[in-house]
Image (cartoon, rainbow, N blue to C red; front, side, top):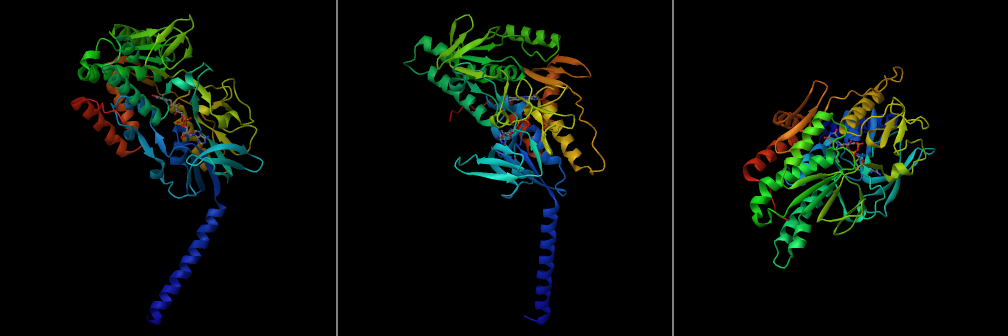
Length: 437
Ligand code: FAD
């Protein structure tokens, strides 16, 4: 090799080592933000935060963002599971330093350390240090300590929950067609109960009703008259929506032949049915539980101020008043004196606000977080939806078009924006896939 060539290599390696030490020093100078979770709130921080200014680390037991408003559609196959999730590694969190598939289990703020436990190997526990901590761990479904809910009911929070529900529906239909099954057992297997008349319970019932009408009745003609869906709510269904929209929904559901709304409270869930507060027992083949939220164990164990629902109290800058550089957003948090609904809309806006606020120069303090509701949408089945927006309130087919358009444009990436309409089209032309696995 010529001496000219050698000097070039030496020159470039010198250049490389200078660059390396410079980048190492910038990395060292950058503050380390640790974000817990990759749901609506945290994902919004991860996407918007200035990664040149901060060294950003995400710790979450799942490695994807989940578009929850369309989760109910995957329980019956209107949409496929992978059509509503976005892998976190597509957002730039690729190396072992920046993404950990783990649970945050304990916070030691004096040492500025979060203790973590691997989601793949529970024996693997380790600390991660932070300069700034963002808690966006969401919430669990609340069981209200009702016996049997954890053991026998199905929840609808994550993709694996939707998978379980889809499998149970198809299992029950297949079981009901087996030769030795009695009529009574058939009726039990094909009685599906949804507990909780909030948007999740109503939307799941709606998707299930469509599945029944559009596919199951055609594919299981002998079971047509046996199937029944009961939506149980102790108070009003869709209580966060306008009264007119609520009565419209009730009217539509009451007209449905194989569906009923039951105003009651559940006191026990067993493997063959539910017990109501009047002592009556209702045999059923599946219970989907969607009756409220409860704090995650990480939040439960935090020794900070919380409200009566166990949410972390934060100030108008979303910061914990008692801990320096610790923020909480989304369903796990509540702004002192300004209770906001536990919705994707709130979590996403809080995440975006926080990313922007943290990226500001220290000399320019951020304005407080202000939430402006842009509206609420809910699908009620049979190509009808509700729209409760600041512009107006509407229901029916036009609102369904609005519901679909709003959500398809809100999807986090172009891949999902392509995938979801393709699934909708596939379902419309060919029906839903009823393979059981
Ligand atoms: P989440 O989105 O739940 O994210 C929490 C994250 O924290 C997840 O990544 C989770 O894996 C992670 N995590 C959990 N434990 C730990 C831990 N110990 N350590 C680290 N990470 C952890 N809202 C609307 O506005 N419109 C709708 O149409 C709508 N429809 C919905 C439909 C369904 C079926 C459901 C379940 C919810 C719906 N919501 C809707 C509500 C909305 O999804 C929630 O309000 C929103 O997800 C809250 O965002 P979050 O970031 O607080 O929590």
